[in-house]
Image (cartoon, rainbow, N blue to C red; front, side, top):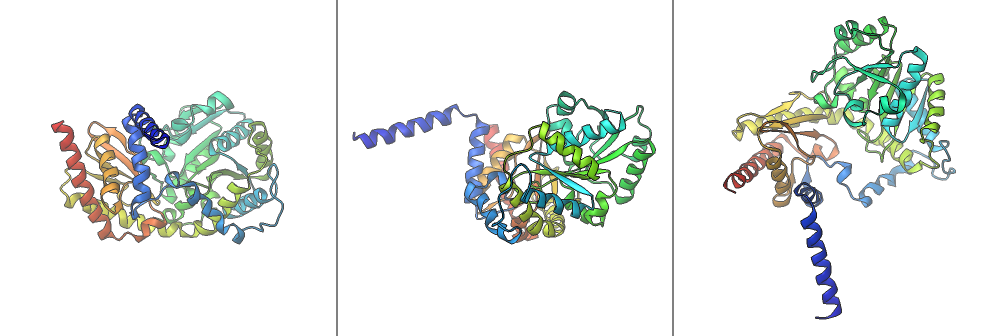
Amino acid sequence: MSETAETTAEEKMSEEAKAAEESPVALRYRRRQAAHRAAARVLARPSALATVRERLALLDAAGDVYDLDETADMYGNGVVEALEERTAALLGMEAAAFFPTGTMAQQVALRCWAARTGNPAVALHALAHPEMYERHAFSRLSGLRPVHLTREPRQPTADEVRGFDEPFGTLMLELPLREAGFVLPSWEELTEIADAARARDAVVHFDGARLWESTTHFGRPVDEIAGLADSVYVSYYKSLGAYGGAAIAGPRTLIDEAKAWRHRYGGQLFQQFPTALSALVGLERELPRLPEYVGHARVVAAALREGFAAAGVPWARVHPEEPHTNEFQVWLPYEVDVVAEAAVRQGEQTDALLFARPWDRGGPGLAVTEIEIRAAALEWTAADVRGAVADFVALAEKVAEEGTSG
């Protein structure tokens, strides 16, 4: 055997050993990545599954939104300041501060409000992002005390705010509430909730990670929605496709204080121009299209319901039935491993990939995933969705049968 052949054989054995060591979930993730890239048509193309080359292409349009001959940013000036000013103007606020993450941004905003109100208690939903995904950072790092208005998978009500049994300094509302299905209150309900908080001498902060796409549901421009709050957090990557980043917008005195805490928390990075530029591109290119995405989400949701009914699936839910934003949940009566495998096989065996995001266990024999409608989904007609559902259900039944016979 030649040296080259031996090396190739060794590399192959190394890859096989590595694959053998990987968990089934890790192996499926690698297959999902490959299927996502190979499929001709994907309902949702999340940036997490994109290649580095694809993500870098986002900056091809950067010269349209900022003078690239300007000096690069340093510790938050230049293009970062331009992004902050643009964000504050869009939200109708006096000022905004850029942060590398939303976790840091909201901690800083809420600790600033706690100092001003003299009350570290933050009233929020038990399913809110800080309670689900941030390792108790509010209490561990910022000295805040989260108190839960409700655990129900819906937005809290004004009555729950008014009747809460202890004082709180800040009411934090996640708009939309992701874990409950990206749900929003009505405009009247949101106004009443904000009024109820202020009647208790509390300030109102919106966790608006996806606030940008809420305008269709509320029938109001984003600055009018933000105007109900004392401060607002927005994300640049969840809706707008940026590389990352977030901002807090509010009164100038609050933002000045937030920038001091940003430095203390380690968020004053030396240079952030790629992320800031990608956010400016998102505001220019994606923000105007979000209402179109929300409208098409309702078309896709209806087609999914029709497709599962036609395929004879005994219990299937699209939640909400009419999506409030361009994202919603799909619940199916299968074990997670069955639908996760079927989703990957659909990408591997057909030219269409219907479900790009992971699946979670929603209960015994129930699986849930999220659907996000962006530009790629606009190519899908209702008939396309129904056809892809039929293919997916056939694959799911086959996978389930294999598991039973095995």
